Length: 628
Ligand code: ACM
Ligand code: ZN
Image 1 (cartoon, rainbow, N blue to C red):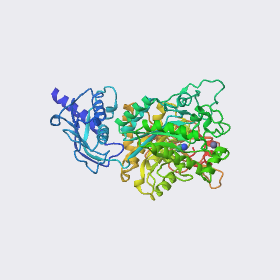
Image 2 (image 1 turned 60 degrees about the vertical axis):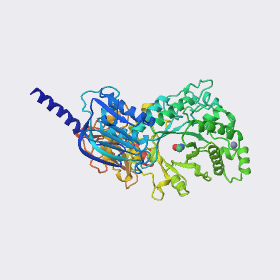
Image 3 (image 1 turned 180 degrees about the vertical axis):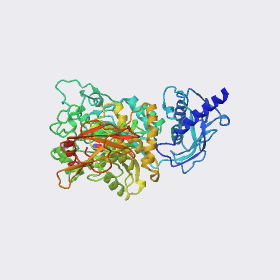
Image 4 (image 1 turned 180 degrees about the horizontal axis):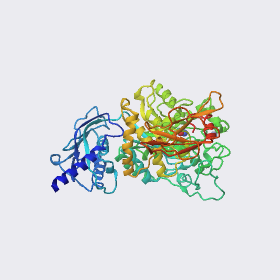
């Protein structure tokens, strides 16, 4: 009898374990068949794998996850006695390419096959997502039925460039934090980490022949609070805030990245956004004024943060910088920025004017184009290709440049029409620094990019040959992202949406299904201690102008379907006994100065309660949809 009870209770535990299971892999695989039964992880896990150095990280990732939270043991063995088989194809399976894999989970064993180690790494990531969320824990978890549903998966990416950009200039993030970011990226099959290594607020990479870049350019005065509203540097104030990566640090990060199939794309932003460089070497700007590295304050007069294109020492310095960068970074590209150059100083500068005359350049756009073409020649001489923000189109694109399109898709479309490669990062879909929900309950940001924006965008416009679109990125600028927890908050879950945009077939994109899978990822992120935003669950207020052009009513919405919204105008806290929003526009009752609402699922609050003043809503009438 006791045996029967024990048996029944373990069946109950297993069924309970299985009951909550839906297959929730993000990014959704190309083909996935759910089969009968489950693989139950044995307490001694035997793994066979080809003897290949490239598999080292995938195997370490697999064994750590299968042993630490479970308390089980893993051992390497031969194929005959293993339950987990890691196999590199002897002859390539064309369908899989370099990053694809096949994963079979049967009642008896697991098989992951791929043409290349990258595919095995991704097969491991998908397999781990089939196990209970606690598999991500870095301590032992008891009471879990460690099993995975039987499936066969064939999977490969839509795009070869699936990136996230981290701005380490506006705020510096340590080597260990960047590694942590890469671990998170790799879970969702991102393969490019674009590091924005220089800007007005800090130079972040050691250049051995120019030590001033890091002894001066990497440091600024310490300010805390609201970016753009800080006090400027005071006389004799010590520049103690910042940091940089030594070349040894960077080699370690590059190797860590490579183990996870990630390429680090370095960006040195020139000719503008160059105040850290100019602060280190005063003679490089047109005005040659002395500057210190900007600590996040808005100058009352425009900073001369652009390099003087008439000055030959600028090119000599950049040659030195790119010589060391080309030797350090294995990435085939170097990003030279090129964005948002104020060209007024060039117009007034005798050296720049002389350059324009000598080189027969008609205007300052052509002067910038001349500069970018020279950057391309420098990079080419060092075996690298140039990529830049879409402003590099202005005045004429350098012959072999790749364009990163950020001011919408137009730059990318124009470049592709000229047969240039493109990486898509249009800000209103891909900028992770923007508000991700109702602004009044988010930390300050500029503009808005909601989860739906990221999920529903497609990087290939109709008029463009898909082959020219290498892929895309999510970009995290960090003016207002001052710590790593906030890096995570801004990245996830929009980073989940973009991972699927860049990996999965367009035809399998499905918002409702994505939301179910995203909700299944949250406990995985929790298990790994990763912060994420629930902004998509918050109510959002949109004012709609009345016919009389003076009054307005309010639309309440949320990105997640099926939530109930309850609201109040009297300053008390709404719950399911208050008026329910029906989808119709609502008007402020006479005398009401604010509205408060929250979202509920099955009677329980799931969003943040948000109060907004009528006057603040009225202001939104005059702003574009992406401004608040
Ligand atoms: C950019 O956002 N300035 C590229
Ligand atoms: Zn000049």
